[in-house]
Amino acid sequence: MEALPSGHLPEYAFIGRSNVGKSSLINALMNQKKLAKVSSTPGKTKLINHFVINENWYLVDLPGYGYAKVSKKDRAGFHQIITDYFKGRENLQCCFTLIDSRVPPQKIDIEFVNLLAEHGIPQVIVFTKADKLKLNELNRNVQIFSNELLKYWEELPYMIKTSSVDLRGKEEIFELIDDTNKHFFKKNS
Ligand code: GTP
Ligand code: MG
Image (cartoon, rainbow, N blue to C red; front, side, top):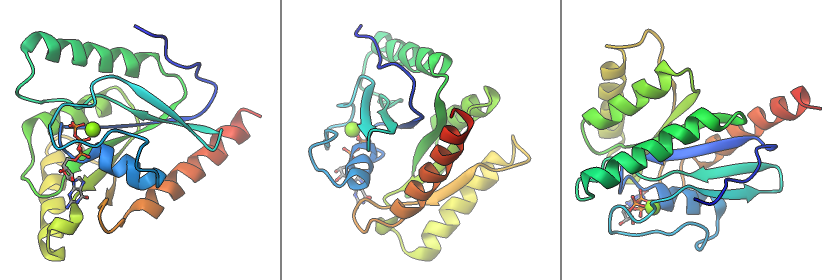
């Protein structure tokens, strides 16, 4: 496997179930349609992709988890890649965990959120495809997901509702990254 770039810059990982809208969100964030591959066929983004942004932070596109049609062996492979990644990236500031806002809490999503929390990896829950729901439905689904997490944790991670169609949530994600970068560079200067 090719080596990952050296970790001297703050790093932000994006991960989620296949087809959650990760590539679309990354493209919407970057305003550049060719940056990450968008596909309607689940499971296309399979390896770890680093994008350096403004020469001062990394956006990391992690492989989608939980795509039912990949073989068990491949799935174990992805799992290993992801686990190794989280173990090895000292400059990882935060993981943006993408959750499809339209569906009830999925076991695999809850497990992933819990896994990061157990390992003390900071994360932000990013609800995707918010444009597909009415506001009250969206809020209800966020509440249902929150209630599910509250079965395991006393505190909830920060949550952002996003859409790569109407671009809501985009500024909030950038503000969070900018703030965190400021702290990072202050600490490391
Ligand atoms: P894989 O890389 O295949 O795992 O998928 P992905 O998570 O990168 O998802 P992708 O961005 O390819 O989007 C999957 C499907 O959802 C595509 O048909 C997108 O057009 C659609 N989609 C993604 N984000 C949004 C959104 O915010 N709103 C709406 N309405 N559709 C979206
Ligand atoms: Mg993708």
